[in-house]
Image 1: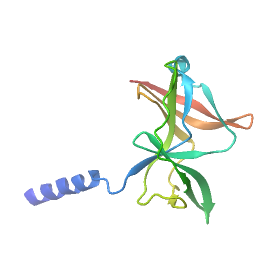
Image 2 (image 1 turned 180 degrees about the vertical axis):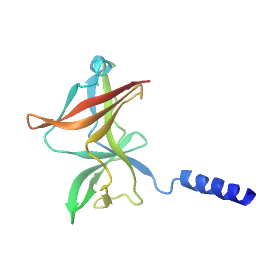
Image 3 (image 1 turned 30 degrees about the vertical axis):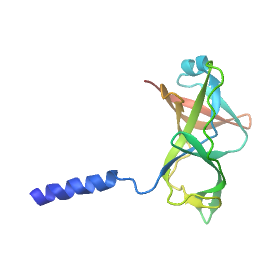
Image 4 (image 1 turned 90 degrees about the vertical axis):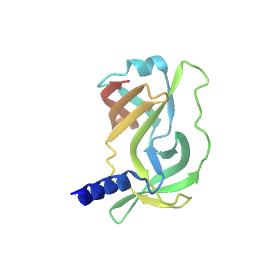
Length: 159
């Protein structure tokens, strides 16, 4: 019995240990007025200002790389097109708040220009929106409005 318990605890400990760094796959960061963010509710539509999907990888809260979606042999992958170790800009004015639109978290072993990562298991319909201060969390789904990419809010969580 004791050996089983130790084995289970060791297995749990190893599962909690991260082998590779984790990156957030996100739409490009954008700013909204703080009053608009506070009034967002279920059913609201946010126009993102994109006519095609663009992605970034975020590591420790900073934009790390620009990536594009690549389809090959029925496999969806992202390919890193440029590296960017720049600290994410914070709003100049306190009236604005940065919004992250995250699809998923990816563990990528090696990260460099030209590297591809499999994202077949990621659903691009569901998206999590988090404010810069983590004081508001929203869930949404991608929709198209007049040929432009938008996000429809499906759930609102207040911290």
